[in-house]
Amino acid sequence: LLIPATLLIVGCTNNSNIDIDKNIENTDVGMKLLKQYNISPTKLHSFKNGLVFVEKLTDGSIHLSKLNKNYQKIQSKKIDMVIDPREVKIYKDKIYLLAYDQTPQKTVVLEFDENLNLKNKTYFGKKFDSPVDFIVDSNGFKIVANHYSKNNGTDIVVWTNNNSFTFSTQYAEEANFIRPFKDGYLIVGNISDNTQNVLIFYVDKNFKTKWVRDFDFGLEEEVVSIKTKGNSILLGINSENYTGMTQFYNIELDENGKILNKTKEFEIKNYPLKFQG
Image: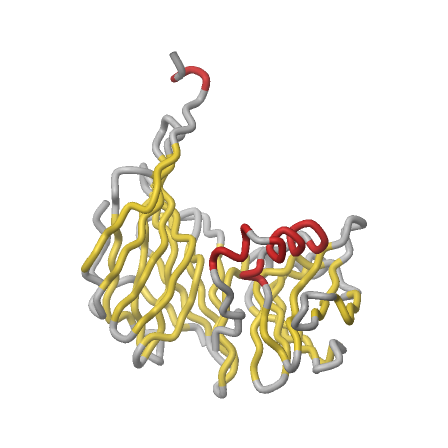
C-alpha cells in the first residue's frame, strides 16, 4: 500500500496513567481490579493521594471513581449524561474525560474538580465524529477523532480549541492515538485498502505534516500501544492473518519514522474450524 509523501490537510478554522508493572495484571491486585471494577490497571490515573478511573456499572450508568493507594474505592459519582467514555487525562489538579455524548451525538470533554464534581463541558466537531484520544496542556486541547466521509469511508480529524484539521488520502484512515513528540505530535492508527496497515505521521505544532509512514507486515495490523523514549518511537502492534493467527510485534522507529528494530513477542494460532484438520 503506497500513500503520498504528504497527507491532504484541510484547516477550517502529560500522560497521567500510573506507572504499574505489566505483571500486575496477573497478580491479586490485577484480578481484584478486573473482578470488582471491570478495569485494567492501565486505566488507572494518579490523582492527588489516590487513583481515578471511569467505571461502568451493571445498570449501564457511568461513574467517575477514586481509589486509595490500597486500591480501595473511597469515592464515586455518577455522570448524569448518556456517554461513551474514551480517555482520561489529568492536568493541573483537574480531571478531563473525553467522551462521545449520545444525546447531541458529538464529542465532548468533561472537566471535573478534585471532589469529582463536573465543572465544565466543551463540545467539538460534527455529529457522529468518533473521538479516540486527546492531549491537555497549557494551550488547551488537541483531540483526534475519526470522521466518516462519503468518499473514503473514514478520515482523521484533529480539533484544538480554535481550529480543526482533516487528514485524508484516497484510502480509509482511522486514528488510535495522539502523542506529543519533540516539537510536534504523533498521530498513530491504521490505513486500509485491501488490507489494514499501520499508519503513523508526525506533524508540527501547527499540524502541518513533516513525515508520514505506513507499514505492512503481511497481515491485518492494529496499533495497540505507543510510547516515546528520547528520539525513538515504540509501537506495540497486533497482526492477524485470514486463518486467525495473531502475532504481536514491538517496533522501534527513529525520529524520522524509519524502523530500527522489530521484535516478535508471541504468536497465537487460533485457526477457524474450516482450517482445522
